[in-house]
Image (cartoon, rainbow, N blue to C red; front, side):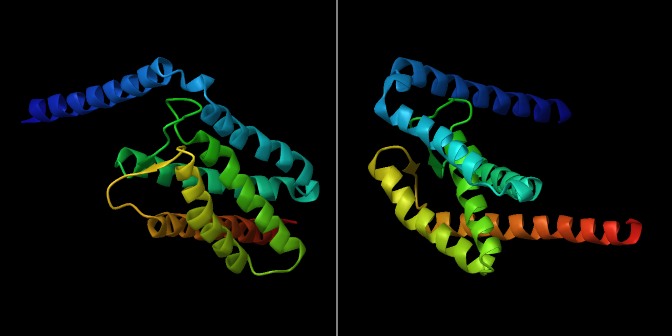
Length: 192
């Protein structure tokens, strides 16, 4: 029984490895790295980081960086789950082993960081503006990416599902950040 379980698990790992090899071969065979679409994905990775460098409030650098990292991690996990479940994927990955890196690691976290920073600086409601941003990303940006052939939805996956994924990310990122800020204030207040 135990031996069968281990054999089954080893087979699943092997299938995952073969799937990744197939994606790597697809990337090379179709010269994905020579396409306009590929370089567009590279720009979606590089340009937001450059913008962030100039736009981030340097006095809130660690705080905004922590929040952005939360967005990156949470969005990365949700994206990974959705890709592994066959719900969506990126036909022009910047790096085949990490298909969503342009959006997961740069475009989406930077977008939310700048929106959050704006809400703080203008004393606006975080949830109102991040929900609006999520709606734009899910119902405008993602359809645009699909139109350009840079993103694919599979099965019954739809834009409302993507919107809900964004909502989960922005709520969890804010809650986690607030818990850390609360803990830091409490600790500094008692030990300051």
